[in-house]
Length: 298
Image (cartoon, rainbow, N blue to C red; front, side, top):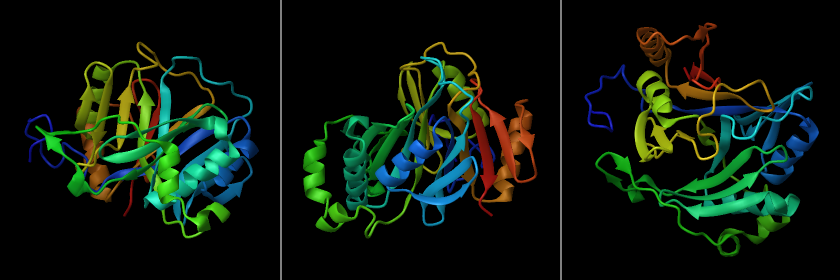
């Protein structure tokens, strides 16, 4: 087995191919407003609501966990943390329904759109300033790899033309009608520097590098997905450890089996990386204090 940078890798050096993302946990100041945005706008369902915590997702798949923390302030400008949570939809029709719903509820939250060759993406900012990407993947047979790197781009997408093509009359009347699944496709973080991000997320955590913007962004994945995570310095170059604030509380990663979790534990121990093990998951702080929790599906 060879990693994407051409260096020989054993099965215990990288995360299992079937690794995926779990829900993103956010600390929020106004829980009701945030539930309304993601439920009535993004079209997620409230899977549970218990006191100060609400879980939103689709079917049995959690996408966001919102923790009410009104005592906290917003993060300082240019600090490390969440760049965006990227929610993956099963079809362009489901994506169009969600875009239409958000545009109807909160038109000022739209920030842009792009064809990335591997996906079609639309970007928003939620009521508390957290970035949100809503996207659909092209089939993997349409992706192109060159020397171990995925080919991606940022090409213009006309959001109105996309809606005209894929928004159905049924979803105009009811954006939830006939929708398929949705999940966290990837998580994009703001970090202080790319070298430290590569050391932590590739060498220690076990993702493989898939794409890089030299000096400013790194995209990583398991199993040759275009990216499960990305880290950039576009608004956070030189940032140090995060202080406790509203916004990102935790990123969840799910490996296939307990054996995969054990392999990660061994790898972290080998590199002297501190972690907590509660018997169900490993909790690790990245170099900027963002909490990453890794659990096993089985």
